[in-house]
Image 1 (cartoon, one colour):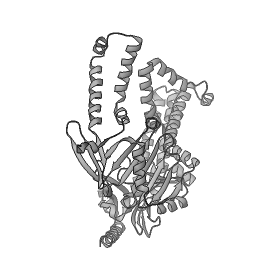
Image 2 (cartoon, helix red, strand yellow):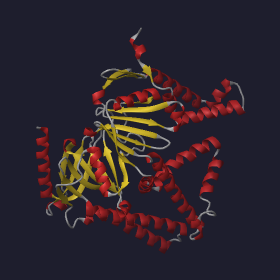
Image 3 (cartoon, helix red, strand yellow):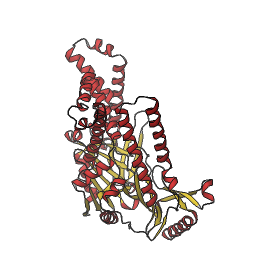
Image 4 (tube, one colour):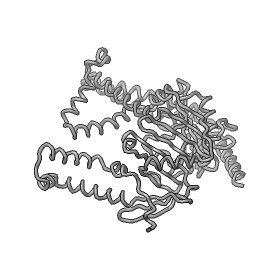
Length: 484
């Protein structure tokens, strides 16, 4: 018997999943011509022209690719053979695997398939080392390997209200718009543009909107669109993160989440690149925080943010973080942002507010502006003022510190204040920079690059130069002690 016969293929659902939506739509069009306008097959194919060639080429490619993708579980690791134009054969040792992700959605569950993605530090920054759909039996076998001789300790279990609040904090109308536009476009290609237009008009119909009783129908339609996109975004996040569970299994953190789509992530605790406690301005008002981790393989699955604790108060988040990661939440030394540096934080929102004010005055003086336009300007004003308030909040709370196991760097990204706990052995580079305006005032910016598949840098602005140098020297001394 040949050695290759010991290798197994992935689940056939892998072939279906990889087909592009464009191929599926053309196949549907082909079936429609067979059913409703029966003609000779040669005539139908010739009428499709390049589309038919495209479909057959893609089907041939994925059929050959699926047939060549084989795997075998050996004593030392996972042996993979794959390739279409160039054949590849490699082994991923078990002791080098850092993250394994099990993913199952409603469709794959019907086919009895589960997606397993495996990642190591040597992998690509965009894709997993191994990723494919396998049978439920194979997935269960791998899960048992993790649990063998170990007991799982559940640390955190989310409440429904926490996930609802988290979804509301993370959501924005743009995310909902990005999701709904492709859906409407694909629906219009299948059912016709008129049907898609009727759906849009039904959603934006001001007759059933309570907002239309206060403002004009055009403004009400715009407000309804914003609210609907925000609700869609919130629903997406809720379905992704409901039933969030964070547990410790030996040397691993196990994170499970999702309702319709179930995702389980297993990653090594000692390979966590950073732990982040996150807080938006609205979360600050409600005294809530999230906690997430950054590891090899995090962020590659769509919608994955490495969340381990969702929308809890500060005391609970700190307790759960330490129990899950072993990193203490306190700080033995802290350096705040230099005084009188607020201008550096509020510069951009202030400029945008001034420009929008100038544009609004110009439009009112020289042009006739409709109520819907003024409503849109008011919405933008609200966003800019919120941005300004968040930057003031970030200025007051940004700082640099250390504790027994990690460098603590609290800075903002977008509209979220993030307090990063970076283990000393995960720091790859610290870089102090100064602009010419900072030299006389003794201020600086600090960049910290951490270990990972891609360049991940955290930056904090306007720190006192001498205190920052002294703290970094202390960090370097601790790192040397750890290495010895």
